Length: 188
Image (cartoon, rainbow, N blue to C red):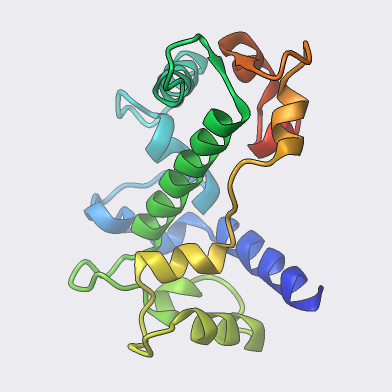
């Protein structure tokens, strides 16, 4: 329980990193970043499809609709639990990849250093220990795979699916998917 709490605190800390650590625009090196948190930067990187720095409801709906349609492997216009879990896994993988790109400010290296990992956070023993535990190859940098394991993401849960399946049909319509999910797993 203590390790799980530490992981949650660490992940929350990473999401709250201020934009000053992204002054060079994260991985792509662009110069101007608005005053948003890492979580908002990830959100913007995923949903700002026209690149104007603003995310509209239409953009979010378009990306989420595309995600839904891609996950609907049998073209039934509904998602089974397995299709939903696949969608959640793909969405979480995309979010982790974007966060990794944003945090990895040293474009000469493909790994995330402890300095990048802990930028604008209090360098605590827990942060340092979590980094060391995640750095399984001992190269003092986290690969995307190591960073993903550290984040502890899991596939979409039955609870999340059930929360979205408002008509209890054991499938999700696009309407249920778009209306019910604000955060992961159907939580509002």
